[in-house]
Every structure is written in structure tokens, then in C-alpha cells.
Amino acid sequence: MGRSESLKRDSVMSNGGSAKVKGTLERKKSKSFKEGESYSSWLITEAPGSIAAVRREQVAAQQALRKLKIAHYGRSKSTLTNFTSSKVVPLVHPSPHPHPQRCSFITPTSVSLQNSDPIYVAYHDEEWGVPVHDDKTLFELLTLSGAQVGSDWTSTLRKRHDFRKAFMEFEAEAVAKISEKEMNEISTEYKIEMSKVRGIVENATKILEIKKNFESLEKYIWGFVNHKPISTNYKFGHKIPVKTSKSESISKDMVRRGFRYVGPTVVHSFMQAAGLTNDHLLTCYRHIPCTLVSTNP
Image (cartoon, rainbow, N blue to C red; front, side, top):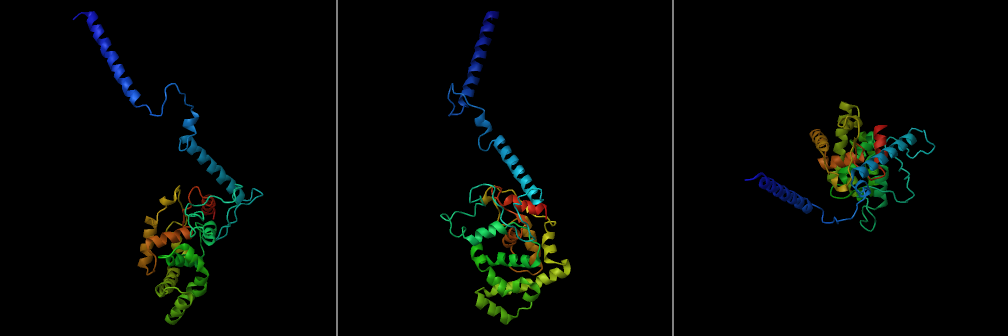
């Protein structure tokens, strides 16, 4: 074979390979791509979900957190939050919009009347996720978390005043002394299942034992999280679990000590109510204030 023929063959093979690669590349083009049409880099960097968009959200969140810290420490004339030991006054939303963005389970009235009940919204805005360190309030929230099993939080919150009257404002020493006859009277008068009434009284006796060993219910409960609230970063409501490994370990220990109505799901609900975990969605206007009160008790 002559040198000229060899060069010609190599040239043909090279052109054929290039055409094959070109064909492959063309097939991989997006179907929406149009020849000759130019695409701005803005579409890439500013598109929802892009790295730049996520970074902007992070920077905005950091700036908002800084402003809230300044307000909290009194270096600003406007104090947006007013923290107490067991309750937080709803944050004044910086947006002129009259309805701040809340967790997705607080739905518009047209979607769910139950979740939109004012008492439930107030509970979300003022208590849910706020750290509680008072023994009486912890006992109350543990009781309400167990009481809403088979019911719902709205119905349980409506009976909150009845629970307080029936169980001596959740003074454990007084509740532990309730007799069998008094339990029956409470069940009849306040329409609370007898099994739950008995469970609450028994829990009061267990709390007294806890106080002997740990000085307070607060030290016992908060010890499971090293006395520091768990701050989660959920973006969507369906991602919030009904129980966690932490609630399972707390439940296991409480059951071992004789507590009733303290399954993992109930305990997780109690942890949310008492602020041991801050499960407000990142998009909820209460997430940052509850994080602040957690890091700056």
C-alpha cells in the first residue's frame, strides 16, 4: 500500500470518527434547545434551586438572624421579641403583609377549619417550640400531649382550662394525692376518660420520684438533650417526623420509671411543645425567634 493511500485512509477514518462524536453530542442536546438562540447566564445563576439562589437565601437568613440578635440584646430601639421563661410574644413580622408565613400545617380556613382555629394558631405562634423550664408547665404539656392521642391538638387546647382546674394547676404534689373517688368525680365533671385521669395521677407520683433523684422534672427532661434544644432545619411539613430516636430513648426511660401515656410519638409531641426541639419550618416566621431563645436563654 502506497503512502498516499495510507494518508487518505487515515483521513477518512478521522472524519468518520468526528462525525460519530458530533452525532452523539447532538443527540444529547436538550430538546428545548434551539439553534441560533442565545441563553443568558442569568437563567443559570438566578433560577430557583440554583447554587446562587440557595446562597442568597442563606445570606438573607443570616442577616435576619443578626438583626434579631441586635434587637434581643437591646442595641436597637425596636425590640421585636419579648422572651420569658415559658412563653414568647409573637414576633412582629417585618413584612407589611398582615399574615406572616407560618408552618405549612397552619393552613388557610378554606383548606382546613381545624388547623386554622385561632386557639391553634396562637399555640403555634406563642408556645410551640419555645423552651419551657418550669416543672408545672412541663407536667401540663406532657399531660396535654398524651390527652390529644385519639383526638387532636385543637380539641385538647379548648379543654386546657378544664385540665388545669381538674388537676390543681398541675401541682404534682397535689395531683398525686387525688383519691379514687375524686378521680371519678373529675372524669364525670370534666368529661375526661377515667383511664387518662388515672394515668395523670400516676404520672404525678412518678414526677415526685423524679424530683427526689434529679431535683426537678426540668433537670430530668432537659438532661436528655444536654440542656440545649435541638434545632432542626426542615423545609417541608411532611418531612417533620412523628417520632425520633431521641423521643424513643426518652420514652423508653419514662416507661421504665412507670410513666403512662409516654409513647415515642407522644414524647416527640411533648418535646415540640416544650421546646426541647424546634421543628418550625425554615420558612416559618417563628423558626428564627425560637432558635434565638434556644441559643440565648
